[in-house]
Length: 426
Ligand code: ASP
Image (cartoon, rainbow, N blue to C red; front, top):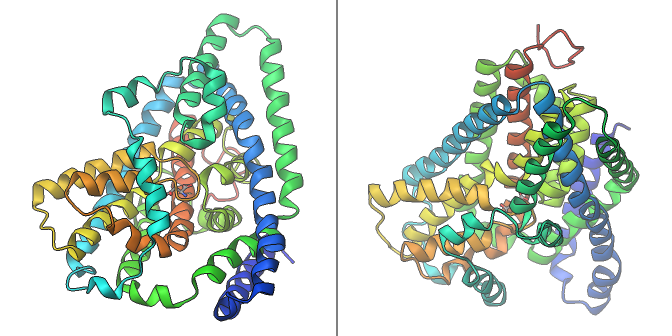
């Protein structure tokens, strides 16, 4: 059986088993089984992957920048990456906001019909309260202590670590001036060792995917989906439009790749993103796919994918735009055109600042809704379905990173069909 079939099967089995056992979720024996067996399996897998994310980001980004500075021209790659990121993010938020304005999923929805989650809400409120003013946030992109930044990388501090890696990689290229450097060898070996740990861990992926998906469906069951079905459908429709229309158009207009073959080659990675709900946890798989199957230049793919896993989150930006407008409709807060444009910008920026971990965008949504006068309790209404939406939006986040990496690779290295690229549709 092929890998993606195995993953798909685990995903379907996990979802069905969770749904089937949800009505008995209060049984002591089932709770114990879930707590002591199924939950630890999923957590074990995630922890093993998270364990190598920080060394991988450090070594991958330093190497990417070092090699780009020496070969392709870092400035050109960075410019293309920024251009495609802004294009894709703006399109995704515009789709989300357009759909909410068209279908009004929150208008007339009785608040009593919606579920609430006060414990989860309190936790997010605490996170949101720790948010700093814009100037301070920008200044803190430059870490005082890179080791401290590495320690906090998976708790929302990835951007400062990336800044350090970028600066260090560029400085290494300038200081070595194409001379062989032992530092580069160390980085290459670190990166290769990280990949090996990922490959070994991935052998347990089907079991872990079962456990992770089971968790979500066992806990919430299908009822919650019904009360928020219009909102859910709008988010999922928006994500599908971004994937099926925007990414397809981008690939057709700016590359020689056949979008459908490209998407098919990425399906394993989509499944990992869906099951883990974490762009950071999926990063090692995306890097592997980009280098070995999609045959992108490693320096470009390491640069674009590593940065993208935190700073390019189209699915999250779309979700944030839809959620803010949906909650405004539920609470009857009238948002004029200028406020909606403000929401577009804030959602794009929030997509850049969101940590690539499960639920990473929730504190940012809290800040967004409070800024435009929606009661904070609004968040409690959507928490029950967040995990499901997180799985979907993370898949788009990761897909967007791969699309942008492919576009930058094609436009910059301009060697589209010289290399044996399986996805060239000509
Ligand atoms: N889970 C998302 C990711 O890792 C972030 C979010 O939207 O919460 O990409």
